[in-house]
Image (tube, rainbow, N blue to C red; front, top):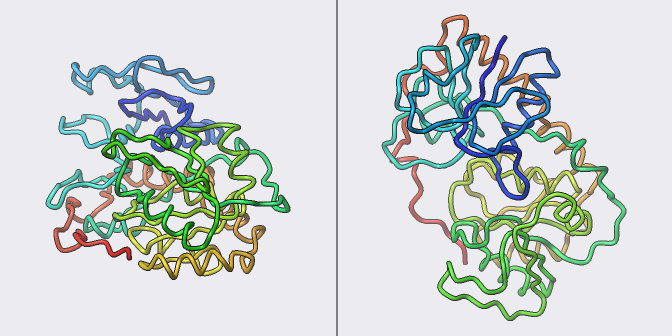
Length: 326
C-alpha cells in the first residue's frame, strides 16, 4: 500500500525529537516491508528511503496528500475532514475533555485508557542505529534523560534522589544555569550537565550509566528515555505515573512516589541484570514490531472498520491532578 506519514516538523531528528525519531523508524520499516512511502513534513527535511513533500500549514491538507496514497498516517490532531482513509497517532498528553477522531491511536495502554480507548501501539526504535550495548562496562554515575526545563520531568527530584544516595548524576537534556526555570543555578559538584545531546555523544553516556533516574510528575504517555536507557542495560528508577508501570517491570527497574525509597533502590542497583534489561528493550520496543502493529491498523481502516467504538476523549476522571513525590 502507498502510505503517507504527516507531521509538521523536520526529519530526521538530529538531537531531541521523540515523534520525529518514531516516524522516521516507522517509515524505514514500512519501506523494508515493500510499502512505498511519502513523508509530508516541514521544510528542510530529507530522507534517503522515501519521498519527501513539504507540509504547508496555510494550505488544505487534502490538497497536499499525494493522489496515489492509500492511507494517511497523521501524528497530530487534524480538524480538516480528510478524504483519504487515515489514522492519527497522539504522542503527547491532552486536556481533559479534548476529543479526537475515531481512528486515533495512542502510544501506551495507559495513554489510551485515559482517552476512553483501547487502541495503542508502543513506540519502537531501530536498535541497529544505537550500536551494540557494552553491558560489562564500568559504570560510575546515573543519568537523567529529558528536557530539564520542563518541570513535569522533575530534574529537581532526580537530583534529590541521587543526593540522598550519594551518587553522581549526568543530566542529558539541560544546563547548569537554567533561565526557563527561574534563573536556577545548580552548584552540586556531583551533578554534571551535558546539554541537549544526541547521537554518539548520548549513546556514549548511556553506555557508562548505572541507571535512569526518571521521577516524572505527570502521566508519561510512553517515554523513549525508558526504552533507550534499558537498551543499554540501565534499570529505570522513577515514579509510577502514566505508562511507567506497564513499561518498567520489577526486573527492569523500581517505581515509587518516595524519593527515599527510590534512593534506597539505586543503592542496590547491582541486583539488576543489564543483559536481561537490554534484551527486554530489544524484544518489546523495536521499530519492526511497531511497523507490523501499525500495518494491522492500516489494513483495518482500509477494510472499512473503525479503530475505536466511539471518538476518544480525554476523560476528566482519568486526569490526575496531584502527583506525589516526597
